[in-house]
Image 1 (cartoon, rainbow, N blue to C red):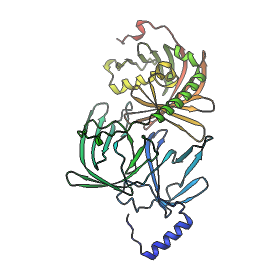
Image 2: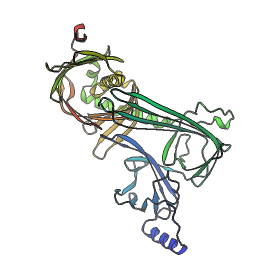
Image 3: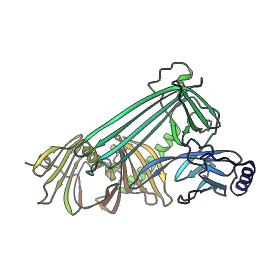
Image 4: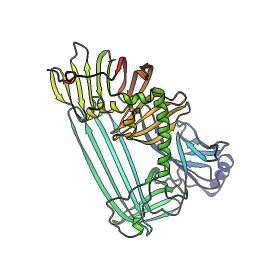
Length: 463
């Protein structure tokens, strides 16, 4: 909201806020990405602007971001203390820490932040942004509604830009399925002044955005547009410009990727040693019995053949699910039918989660995406495996696996492990508690057998 002050009132308020709150001599901007865990897992971007008058703004996507006040801040020993005008929001602190080698780290809102530049230029290159959201979820019987959005900007040294965006909506359920998608593109000229980016499209329309970039002196950096973080990436393949300035494309942050890879696999290998080390790699087949919702089931898994079978042991409940790689069927109420793709993918995740996700064959196809540590010593390693975005929850003190989380097609699900016991030389959880947006399910294992020999009759379809 744009508020006009009389000169005397303005000077007075500036003096008071400077004495009480204002400690920065220049406009400061910090940006980062925070993650939420548990039933509402996801990520969101944090960008905060601190003004010299002691006010700050987090609503940088709003048209009046230059004057809008989210709250007041003051300098403290640890960094900056932020006090919100909205008293329903808990106050927070931007903290600055240094490690033993003198490197400074900035934290805010559960995220590691970087300092941004309120500049008067736009570094040439291609920037990309992606987001996704959903409600409902696969495997729950509920309708799943998911949205995805991708956006990319090319900025050129000659003051021109082009932009492409795409989005889609997917709706699916037990009896319905479908979706829609859309694409758009624009190009024009841009100007930048004190963080205000003005885009003049070729069709004459004008857009105004907030724009800040990380001025770290490196070729790799990020920018914040309207409070959303964009990363340098491969140039948009739809761009038709061929001038030298239009070919300026920044590389991805290789140093960060290597650091994440090294640290992530250090944690995972330490956890692997705790749970059985190389003995985990020797697991080829698994047979287990477990109880869920008062019903007893048998599980058969064959890693080499990518076979998995769930079979009810209840005489009054005849039910069998079986997959082999990307195909599967279900037997229920005396009838056979093919499994839908969503359920097949859900079952296939059993081969790459839990202790079995520590097998060397799984780690070889694992890409480390992010690492987070909570105040109580819990490490969260986010990874990409076989096109599944998922992760490991680790007890840092004991180097033990205490859970997994999965983010796929917007579905948020976390499984906690407890009641750990050694089966031969492998430490396994005999209780799994899974939380999702639809509720909580507890699975209790009675026995787990490694490397049993299966016969063909173990995989036959019920008659």
